[in-house]
Amino acid sequence: MMVRSRVRIRAFHPHMKGIKRALGDLEAEVMDCLWQAPESSVKEIWEKLSRQRPLAYTTIMTTMDRLYRKGLLQRAKSGKAFLYAPCFSRQEFEEILTEEVLQGLVGATGEPLMSAFLDLLSEKDPSSLDRLEEMIRRRRTGLE
Image 1: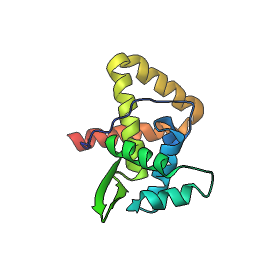
Image 2: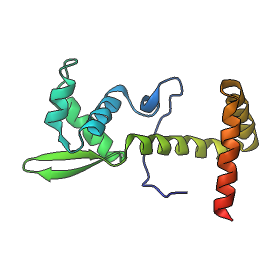
Image 3: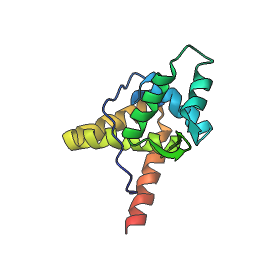
Image 4: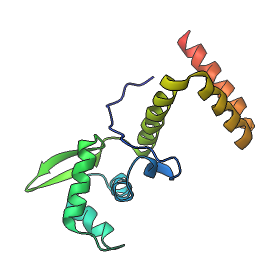
């Protein structure tokens, strides 16, 4: 298993979609912008997002600083401003989020979690059990 930089996920909302499960709406929109155009300034993100709805420049600045403090963005000084870039790709972030949630669940429940997970998989997509079995086989082979 890969060791990752610690990301601070403070809330998880299972009813939301995608990265909004762990981030607010505006934080998710900022991350989407940065995944499309890494190394952007606050002004560039503000200009892009304010085309969709009115937003204060300081709101975007605060949001990007919050994402930096959460460990999701890195920043470098460029003149008088900062350029921000994601610390992780979208896929890496989704994997980190999944790991964080599962670590919390496994530590508390173990066997019931695995049983519930298998029930959900078999209800949604019975063929996913075959894929899971193959993943387990590959993992065991890799560890031996």
